[in-house]
Amino acid sequence: MSAQVAVDKLKAQFGETVLTVSEFRGETTVVVKKDEIVAICAFLKKELGYNFLTDLCAIDYLGQAPRFMIVYQLYNIGIHQRLRIKAAVDESDARIDTVSCVWATANWLERECYDLMGIVFNNHPDPRRILLAADWVGHPLRKDYPVQGPDREPYQGRLQ
Image 1: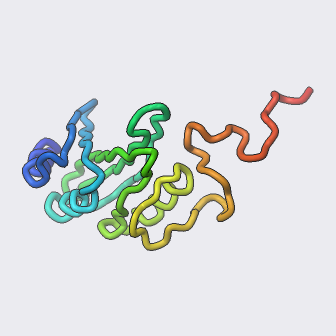
Image 2: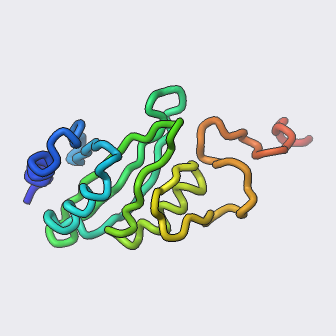
């Protein structure tokens, strides 16, 4: 099964929930509405064999609306096929449903995404920070986060 066949089946099942499909250098990317992300991921795993979530991350498009894009890198082990799913998240409501019920590995990846980007994953089983201290202020991979960190003197260059 090619990625195009998987996309066609995804479109047939979810219709208008699939917003765009693009291919670049042999990699297929599907942008979907965030409201159906769990159903889409469950369909991709159970019906189309994308049984491995290799990565989950967020992109910050500061100054654009929607500001964030959640990216799911999927892999079908049986046929060695990759597929990228993206879902846009507004800055005013930086939330999306967890897919840890579909792939257990999403648990840690979503925690990292929350910790560094501030995206909240609804119904996550363990929404604690994973890399930073529990009392850390802010999310350091956001483009508007102060480069020196909170309450730090701005960097002036190397001391002579």
